[in-house]
Each structure stands twice: as C-alpha cells, then as structure tokens.
Image (cartoon, rainbow, N blue to C red; front, side, top):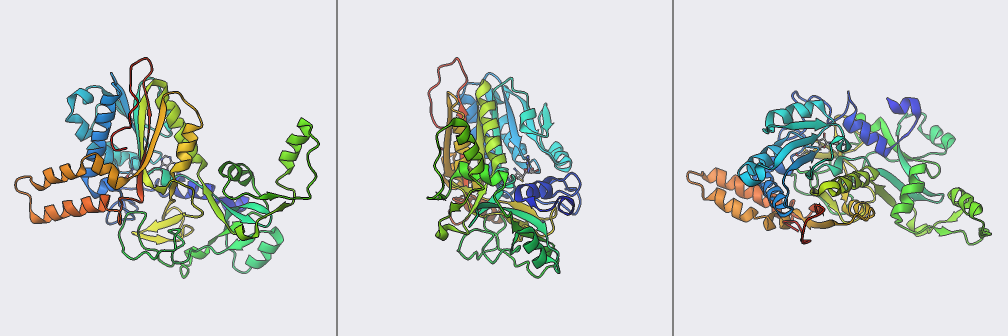
Length: 452
Ligand code: SAH
C-alpha cells in the first residue's frame, strides 16, 4: 500500500484511494456482486432510493428551471449518479413535459466507477447518454443543468489540528504495534487515537439513538476491538504542511497571534515575500485554549463548485446540490459507514464508505469568489422545506388517492414522505443549494429557482 512506500499520507489522499482506487476502491468495486454499496441490504440508502417522489420532484425542478431560463436546447448533467435511480426517475418525469423534453439533448453522467456505469446504463433511458470521468470533460457549447445529489460528502477533505507549533495536518499512517512509541518519538509525529469514540463520527455531543440508514443519522459501532481498525492510525504532521499553510489561512478558523517579539518588517517588497514564506516556521504564540481545535476543508469540493459555476455561466444554466451538511466548516466529521452503521473511517479501506458533512458555505464562497456577472447562488434550505416548496405533499396526496392502492403501499409512501422531510429525519440535516446563471443576450429577471 502507498503508506508503506511513502510514509503517512494526507486524509484527502487516503479518502481518494479508499473510495476510488481502480482496483480496491469502495465505489469502483464490482457493484453487481456481493460488494454492492447502495440499498437496504448493503451499506446505505440515499434519498432517490427511499422513494421515487424525491427524483420526480427534482425532475419538476429541472422542468421549471429549463422553462424559466428559456433554453432552446440544453444538456442535463449528473455528477456521481450511483445506481442511476435519480436520473432514471428524473428522465421519466421530464418526458411527461414534452415542451422541455424536446429541448433536452444529451444526458452527461460523471462517474469514475466502471461498475456503476454499467448499472446506470441499464437504468437511464434516453437517446443520447454520455459518460465522463471528470466534470471538466463535458463539452461546453450549450446551456446545462447540473445535479449533484450526495456527491460532495464523498469528496476528499484535509484535516488540520491546532498545536503549539501552529496548524498541523492530520495524516494516516500504518500502526506498527511494537514500534508505535519509538516511531512517534523518532519521527516527531504525535500518534492520535484511530478509532472514534461513541459520537466522534457525528461530530456532535448528542447521543444517536435510532438505527436508520441514511448516512447522517445512523448509529456508531465501536470498532476498537477489530483487528482491522488497528492497522491504520491518525498521526499529526510534526510541523505545518503545504496544505495547512494554504488552506487554514483561506478558511481562517481561529486567529493565531503573531509573536509580539518577532522583528517587524523593514518594508522592502522582497523582504515581505521572504517573511511571508518564512512566517510559518517562525515562533508563533498560539492561543492555549484553542489548542486541539480541528478544521476540515474540502478543496476538491470548492474547485468543483467553481468549475460548475464557470461551466453554467458560459451559455447559461443552473446547478442543484443536495447533501447533508452545514453552512460552515466542521472540525472532524469524517466517518466510515458499513451495513448501515458508523464505523472507524480507518477500518477496511475500500470496503467501507467514507463521508463527511458538506461545508456549503465554502462551496458558495468559492463560486462567488469568481465574481461572475449574472451568476447567483441560493440556499441552503433544508431538504424538507425544499421538497415541500416543490409540492411533495401534493404528489403524496395524488399517489395516496390512486385507485387500488393498498394500505401497505399507502403506509410505505407516507413513511417515505416523513423520512425525506421531517426535521428529525432528513428534512433539516440534508440541505439544498443552487446556482443559476442567466443566458446572455436575453431579458431575464433574476428570481430564485423553485424551492429556494
Ligand atoms: N447520487 C447517488 C449516489 C451517491 S453515492 C444517490 O444519491 O443515490 C456517491 C456517488 O459519487 C457515486 O456514484 C460515486 O461513484 C461518485 N463519486 C465519489 N467520489 C467521486 C469523485 N471524486 N468524483 C466524481 N464522482 C465521485
């Protein structure tokens, strides 16, 4: 494994390998055999897998947005389509609105996993479907609508911790039991407990009581006693890393006070550049109370948010992100998920899902930092409010009053509605954010997209 050759790797590299390694990755594993990840019998269930109502309403959102923006033609993009369930139902819904369906040209699915592509191919029924490894591979010559549902939580994050030496980076290392103490001293690397305590996975102090299987609210199981959990451990870099120098400054979580006795700049520009470069290695007075603070950042998410903003602003378009998260950064929300339970993120890399709470504020800030004329960012709003604004209750009522519906089917529908919208369930922790860019050259009034 990479770590045995190169030494400790960043948490971001670890996530990338664990989820997408071509041979051993979690999403790249063969989904048609025992290794499948989605659904009741496997590791987790996502909103489109809970009820078709979810994707139907997203289909309505696409119809509404495409109509409002007055597209003559457009492309529909989904990044991270999983089994293809969302796009299957979105396409079915759009097909019922012929004025919009006639304008939809190509469906682009951004998926790195060959195995998931096979499942998507079976489900997505459209004349022109194209697959891409990366969002940036999609041709940019027509307006597009981009969907990303439970994608950003799977993107790699860096984690930092404030120490007496400044912000150091959390790394993943191999745990060699006998040599553990010696190694840590020799390398100047501080070992950190690998497996999380009971609630570390949720990043909250609240006890999690119910076992339900969406990614945000499931139980944590103690993996301390498994052999696998002991193979890897978190360590801290002995000094700030490139990533901690760049990203902590960008996110500026807690001010690190400059040493009062440090010599002041004499004013020359080149001195200033050198001092800037050296400043991380100089002594700094760190607020003692803040030591131990953690910060998690997702540069890949910010970069993708910017790519999407640029792409939809070339010919007009819109994007919708739905995920669990907050309008701020987390300290450490990385968790492993296996069979509908939280486990250590270091357990069985490639066989356990890894996910984090999405920091929507950083996605929004990244897009807005581009200062693109005509680009507006909306949200976040809770998934419950979003779906209600789009008419989930009307849809539920229509389904419940279908002729011949059994009591059992009605109960299932109601439970799915409750699960998707209730604030104790997915209604608040799951959130929606949107970006809209007006097509150039037309008369468009700025108005929030449906649901915002
Ligand atoms: N949207 C689906 C699946 C969510 S699971 C649903 O809601 O059911 C996450 C999806 O993102 C998978 O399709 C996975 O292959 C994809 N994915 C994970 N990491 C990715 C990355 N770095 N870039 C692009 N897609 C990624």
